[in-house]
Image (cartoon, rainbow, N blue to C red; front, side):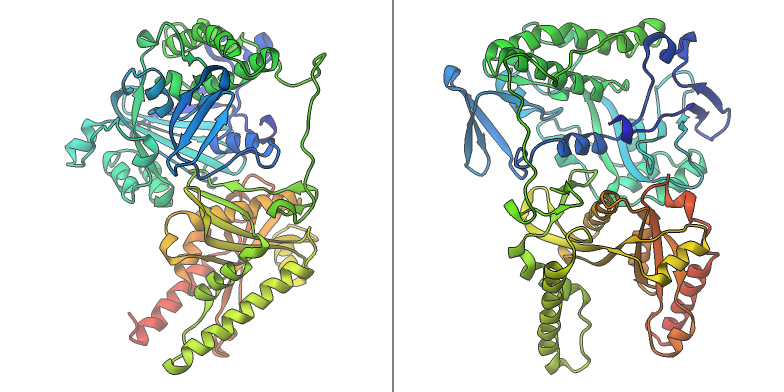
Length: 584
C-alpha cells in the first residue's frame, strides 16, 4: 500500500470565499516531528486503492461477488450457516460482518437499533489530477475557520493520478433550498447513493463558496458523485460485552462507526490485523474471537474519543502513532504456510499477462467490475460491439442483412485477435454490474502497440517511447450508459497498461463524437494529435488521438498543453457544418 500512496507536505486552509489562506505542515503538528519521534509519517491512499491492493494479494477464487447477505444461523460447534437473498447458503467456521453503518449482521447479533444520524450530509467524488492541483498538499474551504461546524470542503490526493473531493453540510442547508433529505436508517447507505442529481444538490448547497472550488465540481462526472447522511454509534453507547457472539463478530463501521477524524478506515484495518493475529494463534474458534474482542474495545474507545478532541494535541498524536501491531504473516513453528499457485493461461476462465494474473478490477465506487473475457462469452461481446458500431443503411430493407454481416465480421475479428495475439500483448476486458456479475454490459480491447505515427506524436511532445498501450473497440450497452461503466473499463485498461509496464495509454476518437471526447477528458485523457483538415474534404471522419500517462503524476501535468485550442476549433467547425445542414 505504501508504494501506491502519496505523501503530502501539509494542508492549506482558507475561508469559503478562498481567502485568508494558512498552511500547516503535515507530520510536524503540535511541535512534534512524527518521523523523528515515532518513526512514522502520514501518507494518503484512496479506499478503492486499498481494497484493490488487498484483493490482488488474495489467491484466485477467494472472493465471491454478487452475493447479498440475508441472515445467519450460529450452530455452535458445527459452525455458522450464512444465508443469502438468492436462497443459497454456506456453512462456515466463522462469520465476520464488515457490512458498514447499517450492518445486517449486527442487527441480528446485537439488535441494538440503527446508528444515529448526526444531522450532516456528505458528498464525495474522485477525479483525475488537474493542472491547478498537486499531490503535495490538501486544500480546505471552511465556513468556520476555527472549527468543523457548518459547511466545509476538502480536496486531497489519493494516489499519484487522482484526488478526492469531500464536502460536508448540515442538513438544514438542503432544506433552505427546498431540497429533500430524509434520514432513513432502515436501508443500507449503498442504496442511498449514485442518484443522478447528487452533483447539482452539492453545487446548490455550496453556491456561495470559492469559484475555483465550484469550477472543479462542475467539471466532475456526475455519475461519480455520491451523497449520504453521516451516522455514528457514540462511544458512550458501545456495548460493554463487545462485538462478538459465538462464531460471529463484526468489525469496522459495523462495530464502531464514529465521526470523521481520519481514523475510521485505519481502525477497520487494525481490526483486520488484530483479528488475523488471534485467529492465526488460536485457530478459527470462538475463543480467538473473544480475545480479539477484549483487545479492540479499549483501543477503539481511546482513538474515537481523543481523535476528535483537538484540545488534547500531543496526546491524540501519541494514541495514534505509538501503537504497533503484531505481524500476521511470517514463520511460525508448527504452522505450514500455504500459497496458491498462479493458474496457467486459460484455466478457470482467467487469462495471465506478463506473469501477473488480472482477475478483476473493481470501479472506485464499487458499482462495476471488469475482468478478462471468457471464451464462451465471445459471441455476446461481439453482439455488443456490433450494436455499438453498426451504422444503419439508408436503404431499410438491407439494413438487417448488413447488420448481421457486420456482426459476423466483428465476431471473426475478435476470435482471430484472441487466438493469434500474444498473451502479453492483447487483452479483451468485459464489464458487469457488481450486483449482476454474469451480465456483460461493456467491453474494451487493450493491446500493446508501437505504431510509428503515434510514437512520433509522443516524441514531438518530448516523450521518447518504444511502445504504448492502445485502447480500442470500447462499447457499453445502451441501458448501462451514463452510469460509470465506461470509466470503469478505462480504469481497468489503464491498470493493464501498468502491468505491461507501459508509460502511456493512447486511443482514437472521432472529432464529432462529442460525448466520447467529454468522457475521455473527464477520465484524464488529453488531445495529442488531430487528423489533417483535408481528411474531411475526402469524406473521411477526422480523428483525435488522445493520451494519458500511466506512470507520471497525471496527463494534466504531462500533456495538457499539447493542443492549443485545436479541438475546440474543430468542434466549432463541426457544429457550424451541422447547423448549415439543418441538423440542429
